[in-house]
Length: 189
Image 1 (cartoon, rainbow, N blue to C red):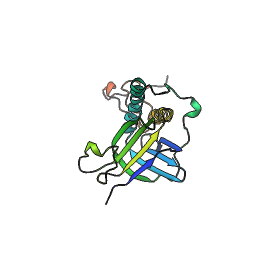
Image 2: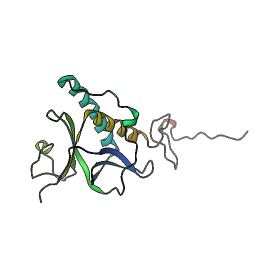
Image 3: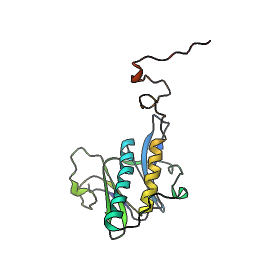
Image 4: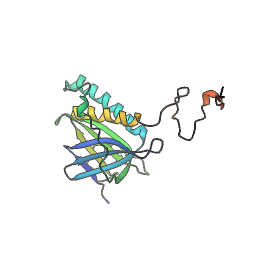
């Protein structure tokens, strides 16, 4: 069966979002363009890495190609709306690709489905018939910066961190390795 490549050349929206409570969240990237909507599932760390790499790519594009790349985006340009429902997973992301399309002057984000076999690098950002399904999104530099800003916020909006060990605090309790398993007990005076 030939692969399916979902291409969004002028997305109305491309955002990172979550479903579920902190500590049990599922992370999604969702692209919409007119009546089309594609949502893909991925790991929190993948969202974080994608956001970071987009920032690095934008810096490189500005330096090498002289493209007009915003350092920050105005707050009103960062999409803060929730994911569009229903959130139906098209596939789970395994490999991510990132590039610059000099012709359209856009950042290209490509997300490939998890596969059991190893992926040949030539499949990423290519339209070959063989390979995993993919989601390919073209973003203006400002749109890419806005995506990265929201993605960082989504990743950071999880559970609070323990001030001693920086591990996430669970609602059910937290055994901090920095306290060697001991818990401070406060006694009423």
